[in-house]
Amino acid sequence: MAESHGGAKGPAAGAHTEAEGGHGGGFPPFESSTYASQLVSLAIFFVVLYVIVSKLALPKVGGAIEARQNKIEGDLTEAQTLRDQSDAALKAYEGELASARSRAQAIGNESRDKANAQTDAERKTLEEQLAAKLAEAEKTIAATRATAMSNVRGIAADAAGSIVQQLTGVVPDATSVSAAVDASLKG
Image 1: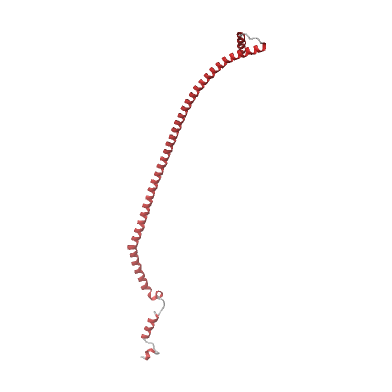
Image 2 (image 1 turned 135 degrees about the horizontal axis):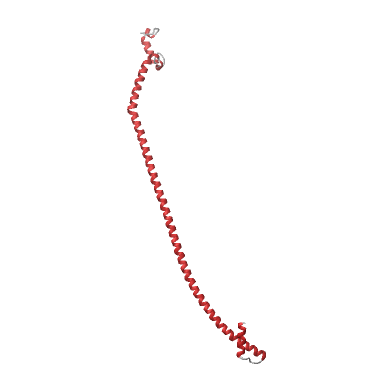
């Protein structure tokens, strides 16, 4: 047994070396002796992977994509419907607003017309009252003037008689004084 460990290398020593150090050659994928088996394994693995992907994974992914697309289209349709509804509501709101403005303007015009009519009626009533008071005042003034003018004639006749009496010392005749005052008032 000592000899087998010593100088000569036997099959056991070679096996022992391969187990400890790995393969005797280079990196297995680059060894030309294993190309054929690697290509067959790769082809089998590719076919199995293709079948798994095409039969299991792609339908699920396709279904998820289709469901997502349907959800997006549904959301877009719903968004368009809501937009149309909001546009219709906005148009209705603008119509109601315009209608309310026109009603408010009509009410304002009606109120203004009523106020103007009432003001005109009150103004006419006041003008009539003022015209009646003015007519009364003119009548009063005319009567007062007539009374004053008649009093002026009498006062003028008395004053003229007094003046003549003081200047001449003679009492003048009332008829001649009245004639002189009438002539003076006419001219």
